Each structure stands twice: as structure tokens, then as C-alpha cells.
Image (tube, rainbow, N blue to C red; front, side, top):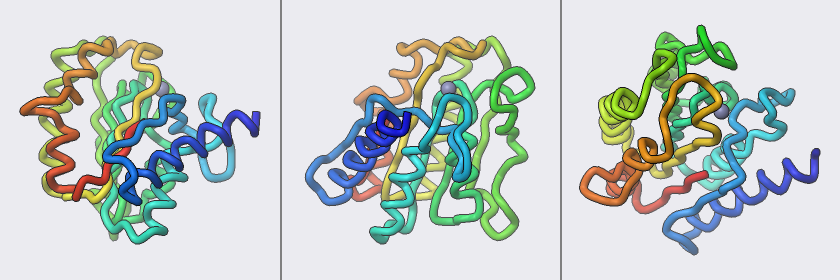
Length: 199
Ligand SMILES: [Zn+2]
């Protein structure tokens, strides 16, 4: 278990490093999405929280503003917890409402501690939400947040969009990240000095 989880973490770290050091314009870690792991224990099939590991590495390299956008159906609780009180990291998670889906967190009231308020943004969607509603929620929240936060590094995460009852297909999620005039990744890069990674 350790070996497999460490390989995933290493792949994500390598993607972050390649982008940060300028060897690549974008990076992807396709085995990723293990966003539930906590610092002290595994959770939700996740052993090592590789997005959090990579973000911590970026901070160690001197990054001052990192945006983490989590579009998996589950709340990105592990990443949020890792940077809850760190104003350098903005975590945004769109997910099914915690009343109906693991991990039972991610209410909009979870916004960060007093001295880092606004460092966490949670959009809890009703069970049964489909592409149109999901895209409306995404475009109403993520672009303005990224414009305001002007991150140096962007980090979208998705793993299993159909495990919950929010029914957003890859077509719908693709619309959130498709190249073109509304391509959020492009917009983010405009403010981000070209440093982005994805998993
Ligand atoms: Zn998930």
C-alpha cells in the first residue's frame, strides 16, 4: 500500500516541480484525487494526500499564492484541513452536500479561521445536481475567486465524479476546463505567471 501511494505522491510532486521550474507549462497526475488523506491518518481510500504534499512543496519553494480547485463529487477535506490556517493557499471545493455524501464536511460556512478567513470556499450542491446546475455553480464562483486571488499556482482536482448522486459527467466537467474563451485554466494562467498543475 505504501509503495503504490508513494508513487502517486511522487508523480504529483514531479508534475508540480516540472511546472514550477519551467520544464513544462502544465502538469497532470492522472492517478490522483486522493484528497481525503489527513496528516495523521488515511481516509476515504486515500493514504497520502499528494495534492497537499505538492502544494506544501510549492510553498517551500517560495510560492506565496496557491489556488486549489477541487471538482470531485466529494469535499476535498484533507487538502482543506492541511491549509486551513494558511492564507497563502486558497482551497475551493464544489461537491455534493455533506448531508448526503462522505466525508460529511464542506458546508459553505467552512471558510477558514478568523485570521485566514476566505482561505477556504465550499460550494455544497444538492444531491441530483446535473451538468447545467453544476456548471452554473462553477462559473459563478471559481472565476471571480481566482481573479481576486491571483494565484501563482492553480491545482484542479477530480477523481470520481459519479460516486455520489451529483450526476456530472466528464462532458460537463470538461466544459469547466475546455480550451477557449472561457477556459478557466487559461484565465488562471493569465494571473498566475504560467504556473499551473492539474491532477
Ligand atoms: Zn471522490
